[in-house]
Image (tube, rainbow, N blue to C red; front, side, top):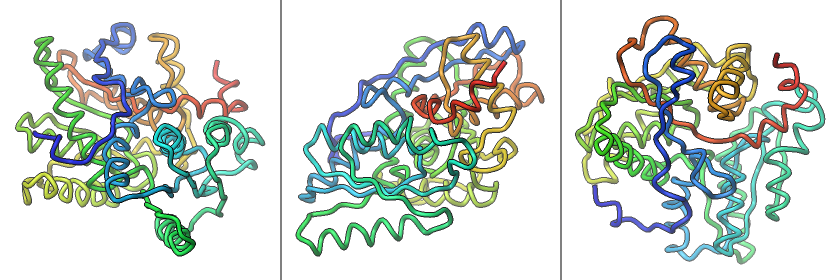
Length: 336
């Protein structure tokens, strides 16, 4: 697909590596696990949001923006990478942070360390809100208010998850297929942690519209199955329409498993902590407790159930986020 049709700025180190996880595959007794290292996209130590921000920031700059407003949970990876992109591009950055989890849950480090610390280092303007608010609506209103004050504010929804942001993962789908072809690697499944929907939507649209049709399993990190499926499907359809292929996405193209969500968004359970430990001690790969840890917990759980067969090749998309480990020090320190 001809991605140069869309406004874009260069932020990421691409292509990201595609590597075998031989030790973890052996520990789990198969299948052949590979990892797509989108924790290595470069901007602010990497992560999946960099790909989305290339297109979102391209659109913002084309529209004359001088200020970016976005939102996320307290330890938002998206917020950190947005703040970094703003510094690179000379834009003012405002981040609205929702307290979905609090210091009562994870200690004082939760609102001082990890991504919060990095956001402050980048000079982002941070404001905190109680959990349960309609954060996208609040963010859009915040941007509108700044515009009334003379700013040229551009609002990016949580996770950078709209059709423009999802173009980053349409591009990733093409990149992954090219890498696999060059390595003569047959990919049977692709899996990752899915939250705000944009990453999975872009991958689904990219695989479907590009003709490779590799199934994309999203392990939900927050929403129940039906809600997450509907969110991903809606964004994937909008993305396909932006690509000029309306109607290309079927609801059956969207695969979601919500059994590994744990107590809720930002709350890792024992399966997530085990996944973090297994990847660290088998592959020296750092996962975060919010997205990639839950995504890997789902992959491990489905391997143990026999969903993935021993002779299959399964790619895990690492979405980054290891900075968040430092905000969960009390929890991570207890991993044995």
